[in-house]
Image (cartoon, rainbow, N blue to C red):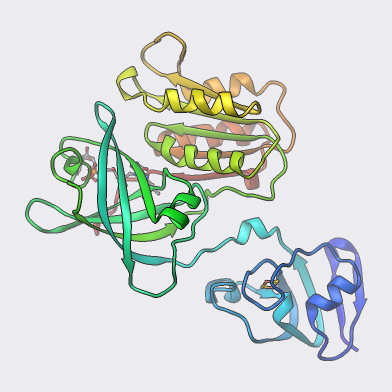
Length: 347
Ligand SMILES: Cc1cc2nc3c(=O)[nH]c(=O)nc-3n(C[C@H](O)[C@H](O)[C@H](O)COP(=O)(O)OP(=O)(O)OC[C@H]3O[C@@H](n4cnc5c(N)ncnc54)[C@H](O)[C@@H]3O)c2cc1C
Ligand code: FES
């Protein structure tokens, strides 16, 4: 008779040959999450540390080959063929949306600050027949447009709109900081007009909102990292999160500041939400002065238990704040960041 052991819980469960693994776990009230029970949603993932199962009848989106190679299985799609040793996982850590290649058109380009633009795209088609784009708040996309010479130029940008807007309205928004010599960003302004073609590969990134987390949420941004963090915070609040949610939006100087009215409106709507605008080199009224990480750390006394930290923006901010948080014993698993690294030579 096969034995299912879960050392972390001190369990050794009796099963029958060919038993469905999820059934065995549920029969013994093992705390595993599940939803579809037919290999479509990926909720019942666990790690097969030892032994074999017969895994069949599941969709690749629910368990991509890369995860399978790392030992993950779907309990609902696994039949027992012998003894197995399992480790349960937090399903939030294994959210994986299928990557899509989308055909988009520019809907509009709005100026948010002198050198910051909101680029809004309409999704008009895709290379597959999968329906709407699904992503998690905080993720990013690779955008490609034609430059003045007609050559394709591509850069990564984080989704600033919420997943709901993409799924139901077919729209994507990005906040882009323009630099005069930037191959992509210099096209913002006059170089990209409504109707222009944009190719989008999405979604990507691990710094996405963890919906099952119960505890305070801190979102920290530098510059246009604010787009990703607004998407994430808005999604958390829309999901009915009741624990404190704080957004620390850092800018180098006052000319880069944007989104303050939007954040003030969010504060009015959600009593558990606080926005902190921090400007490094000026001290305009109503904003804090200094580095965004220092403002955050000054407020973290005493340190809240069970908090998660999401970071987006320049590598220097993300590295510095991550190091400071780790030094304060924040577990690495509660830090989620995709820094805005410059593109490699192949881009
Ligand atoms: C995961 C991720 C998410 C991102 N999200 C966002 C976002 O939401 N918003 C956003 O604004 N950005 C984001 N970025 C950054 C973005 O992808 C681009 O790197 C950034 O916009 C710069 O592109 P560019 O076209 O302006 O300039 P590039 O042409 O890439 O040049 C970058 C800068 O370096 C200078 N430069 C170029 N070549 C050289 C050289 N050889 N020597 C010295 N200097 C040089 C240019 O003058 C320019 O100022 C993200 C990056 C990543 C990795
Ligand atoms: S419960 Fe949906 S994949 Fe197993």
